[in-house]
Length: 175
Image (cartoon, rainbow, N blue to C red; front, side, top):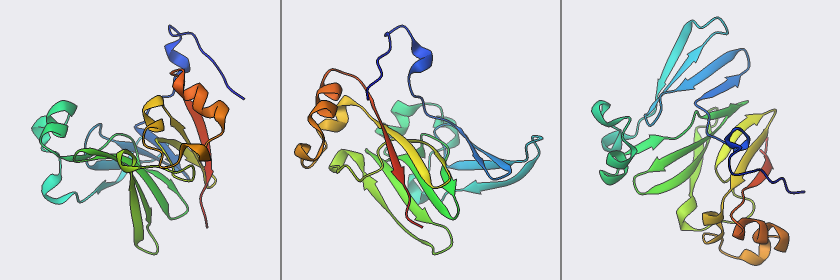
């Protein structure tokens, strides 16, 4: 099923979120940074996480200048990390690539998928939100060019993307 919206209807477009509700906590990520803060529902700061991007960490003075961060090949988060159980899914700019990072915080293992280096239908692409082990993400027309085998996508999905629309994708995380 496809949904169509008028171009002027900006409220119905999917957008990145800098907030994520995890259990009884609210996570907030500074835009284009490497830091996530955890708050109580009353707004009290509980903890802050600094993701170690090493020498590629975004400098404080450039954290709101995406062009400079990309040009200088820094790593930064577009959105708040999505967390369920011990699983973390994060969409970030990895120097010159858009990357989805997968990480199990209990097992301390993970991996990443660079969107610009080839995709398959099982890859989480541009994750927006997560709840109860399900991730909602989306694809845009530029994603089509990154699919290793476009025949793995239904023809109506390909046509929808080629017409310039977005496709919402649902994923279930393995336990």
